[in-house]
Image 1 (tube, each protein chain N blue to C red):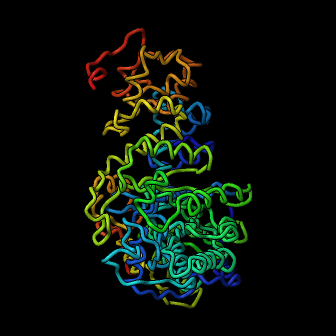
Image 2 (tube, chains in turn orange, cyan):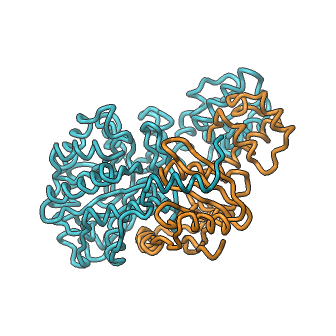
Image 3 (cartoon, rainbow over the protein chains, first blue to last red):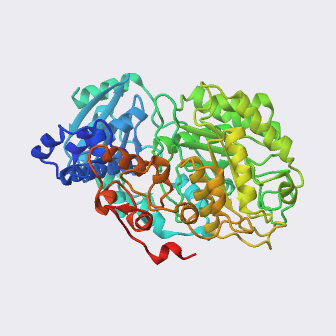
Length: 195
Length: 397
């Protein structure tokens, strides 16, 4: 993984990032960081990679469900401060749809309005969803595709190549939990009631 | 950064009136799994597509076999009139299961709903030949056309080109898809004739690959064409595969070749053939990697094969290094090509070593490790601070 030019953005989202470290990191270029063997630079590099990895995994593992015709929502409880990055990613991917991500403590709302992302931070997810339900005057939960997905997913497995180890390595339990997935069956386990 | 009230967002969303529910999907689970199973051995490792803006490669799930499941990978129909001796959908398979077919509407519904729910990056559509190959190809194209044009689908699409597809169908597939592919299956025409009595290697496969090569422009097909081989179904050796792969990369310009170790299927004429070990597939990927990513010369890679033309179950790069790296390599002075020959040093860590040594001398193994070098493998071939580690391991076969 290469260090991106905007690595400060990732570093500042790290759960252990201090003001002091961020200040020090401002003097280092991305190219320098990529090859440096200085202890502090190595630590910064490691932290940037940890955040990049979590961003990548959440973009991959978070599942979305429709709430009425205008909203997609999903569970997200990341270790690092990346809720907004992930929520924006899904908003860009699903134009004209409100994307809500969150958990029992906080929530993020992003909406791609003609290329511009409008954002809102919310309190706990249940409240945000309640508010949206009353704004739209709808309570219907959309169709869930998890059964279709499960039938398809099961068909892709070739038993002669079973390798639980590599599957675990690529879907670490911690990241699955952050995205609300369950290891064994690899399904989305979150329903509206969980919020 | 625009922060607005929730009410305002809700009002704007209501005005744009986009239906996040998508078209209704109601599919027979048996059909889903039968047609899904048909593509189980088709590999598609990356969904990265270099269009503008770039489509990132994301693996949404991993199967229990460790492979990534990030596309809705399916057959359009499992009805097939070809007679391929390794395939359960072939006309000559005695245990053919029930036949199913999708409609373009169904495929569009499933793809869109799973894409919106973030289970997949897009669609990978292959098919049996049906009664009429042209007709099936037309339906596959209609699926892609509906996704792209009617639903403005921005995700990834990979279309298989059926062996008898016409040039105009191929051209349209290239306009709609990120990537297209035709499976080589065999390493040569004679191996193909052992594997299938109905497919003509030259006209059904190589000729269609050349069509794709010739029709490619900077506008269409951002992720290029790929191909896949069934390894070990007809007793071919790895050297034959390598020769074919060189042709594919140099003459056809495929982006990647995928390898799938043969496993015998009940009811097929090949049901009693020996299953190929998974490691053979792994070693072929390593060989492929040395050519495609490391840009080693074929003459260098040739050292990795044994006297029977097979790759032994050992890292080919280590085998090559034992043959070709005579003197210990000094990371402070060695040129890029020499660094790259050392096991445990890849293209990226070789470039990092060169960037770092411009600023300071490299005197410790730990420094190399922090640049991404796999020290345990690399140390016997390196000279660090005037000393080298000589180990017995280096001389053992």
